[in-house]
Image 1 (cartoon, rainbow over the protein chains, first blue to last red):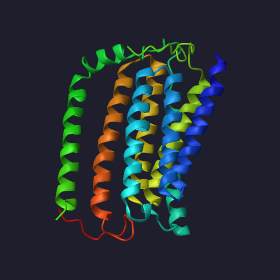
Image 2 (tube, each protein chain N blue to C red; image 1 turned 45 degrees about the vertical axis):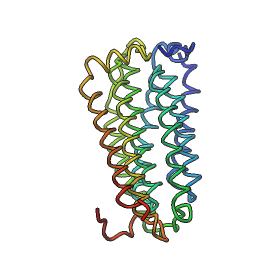
Image 3 (cartoon, one colour; image 1 turned 135 degrees about the vertical axis):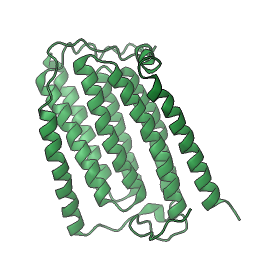
Image 4 (cartoon, rainbow over the protein chains, first blue to last red; image 1 turned 90 degrees about the vertical axis):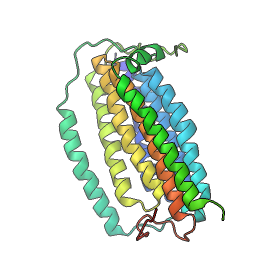
Length: 165
Length: 116
């Protein structure tokens, strides 16, 4: 089944190029647009890896909600959040540290093996719902608390700092 | 059930070694790029987006593992990571707004004190 390699590699390439753009683009609006392309490329990859539910979640939550949230904040920041170009030493240091993270990651990941002939998992909402309300019930319920804390935190930050006098 | 006639994945009978390697390498590179972004950027929004890159890299490994092992639990974990990313974005953006709305320069290195 070699015929899926080319679309998967293309989606990987698109995800990597847009990730580079997220890291190195100067204007925040361009960064947000790159993140949008990146999340859509990842959604395509998830579809090809038979994770339909995760792909839909990626499109709705990432492309639909998070990127729009980022864009709103870009518009609210002074000067659109433009930042000065970093000095060359900082770029070199960041790239060096990135390489030191990348090398052990490749070392560890290359040691992983894949099962010889595993069947494709059922990535439908039904199958994932069974898992989320079955064996993964505790982490799933904990995300409700996490979201509640995030909402309360955001609202209280806003009331304390930004309430009109 | 989300069926939508999406038969793309099931056409892939078995993930071969090349595909496996390409996706794993992509994920490692994405994580490293996100780390570089965290170290490099001074704009808090771009900083948060770099963190999102790292979360996405972890998610990609989860989904790939689910595919090659035939194990749906990993996909559920990927969904939970998605929720985590959303919560992190909400708190981070609220902090960025609270810190920088009344400053002339947007630079995450600049604030010396953060009072509640």
